[in-house]
Length: 82
Image (tube, rainbow, N blue to C red):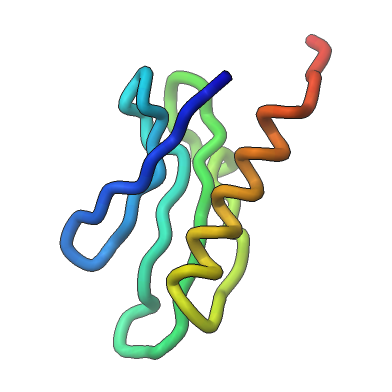
């Protein structure tokens, strides 16, 4: 099972896979406003614009971070056929 942790860098928070170091989500404050955002990155190897999924804007950083955690919790419990 994948294990993730948050790392704070300046005014952004990065949610990353502990085993690979790959960033899978970001949370932070919208510039000059008192609202927060959450974005996930779903690309396996390379990054394309359609790999970025905005989860929304939130009233606090904790809600923004929780949105990313919930997203990846659901993804890791979902079986995908290829």
